[in-house]
Image (cartoon, rainbow, N blue to C red; front, side, top):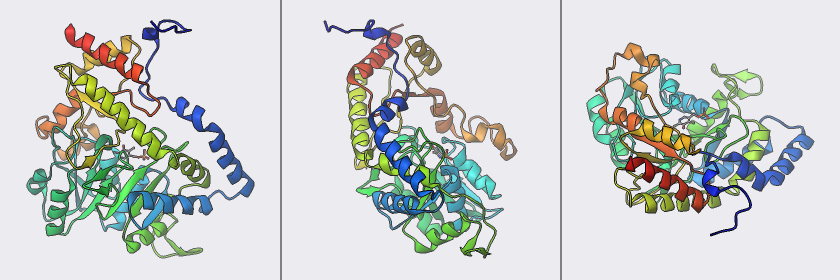
Length: 379
Ligand SMILES: *Cc1c(COP(=O)(O)O)cnc(C)c1O
């Protein structure tokens, strides 16, 4: 028996996410970077933002990055730069965060849902054929939980129909698909640096990355009031800029990202090793040729809500991403969808549960989570 100075370890809570543990490790680096920005008194569109754009583009394996205010801004601007307008249709999965759909809605375009594959939770290319119309302009592909969607058939479909492909890469920075990084697969890709993402700012921030100089330039213009020169606007734009403090913080964190990613992958492997011995739980799958970055470690179980309650009683955090598929939310009531329209998305919404996952998670914590799941399934 180990000599633990505190109460029994079985009473320690396991949070779903522990950003304080990360800050404890990198706080002094972060504070130094913030001090540097404060000393420069340059807060918007300065050197930190430009450097971050280069670094993130290079991580994603593309030529250009354009910093914006959030992942949602990135989606709206990427869609707009790809030519999506009011009245157009945009194909996207219903099992995602609401922003994937509301970005299209913000432009007056209509989200047209295409169901997911049940084992990966990502867009099913075979569904696109059933949903495409003459008005379809673009496809937004989500790499949910840190796993790339199966892009080859989606890209082939888009090419044949001349549709733009935008990756919602908010959850999968650093992931790859057949040797290519997510973010480099479509016409443009959107990143979110929301604090809980794998690379999180200390507030809102986002980026569009692309290999196309034309798209990048258009987004640079749009994020800054449609200005192509100082106080000279060529089209209506807005203020969707990424600020220097967030950029400086993100650049510090970026230096740690590959280590954090390896730690997430090791934690996921440990979860899967233990969960494979327990019938009744489906661990996440990583298809051959994909590299998963485990933004979430998401299992599937039949009595999901009861399991979540059981874990809560044992002070183990967990979250349902996402309990309501987009097509059944009041937001999209006017589209007239009914339960049963997208059965894989609906079933996933009832059965998924994301377990504690962060780089600092320890093996004994993982063991405690899995033990609790095994105990639950015994009753
Ligand atoms: C976080 C997230 C977004 C939105 O990003 P924000 O930075 O919060 O605006 C969009 N899509 C997905 C899949 C996300 O996880």
